[in-house]
Image 1 (cartoon, rainbow, N blue to C red):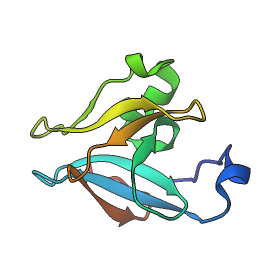
Image 2: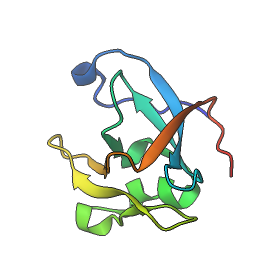
Image 3: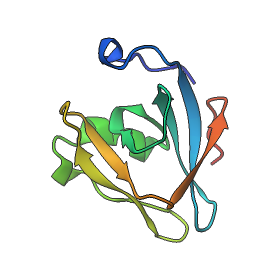
Image 4: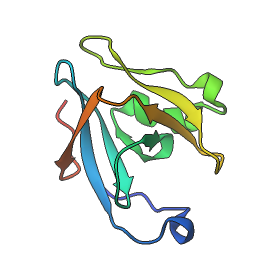
Amino acid sequence: MSRKKRKDKSIRGSGGSKFYVIRCAGCNAPVLLYQKDGPGALLRMYLDRILEPPELAALADDCATKDDVPNLACPECGAVLAVPMTHESGRLALRVIKGRLHKTRSDGSFPG
């Protein structure tokens, strides 16, 4: 998987980017592959950084406002993991609900 270029690099600084498989904390099912930039906790997931599965990766192109973005739910158990938001920079994102997901480092491949 190739890394996406950061449009906001001058704002964020250089902290490197990493691939993570995001899993449901309840049933451990893989939900998506995410490219996280910079250090720190995973508080929100920007739509343009979701790489897999294709239906979630397409949200960045298909959604114009946060009202167009559905809640992120586990495909196995249906638990809501994140809710749509608009960051102060204007980027669409999913706000992570604390304790609902786990992230695991990945080499860029999605187990699904």
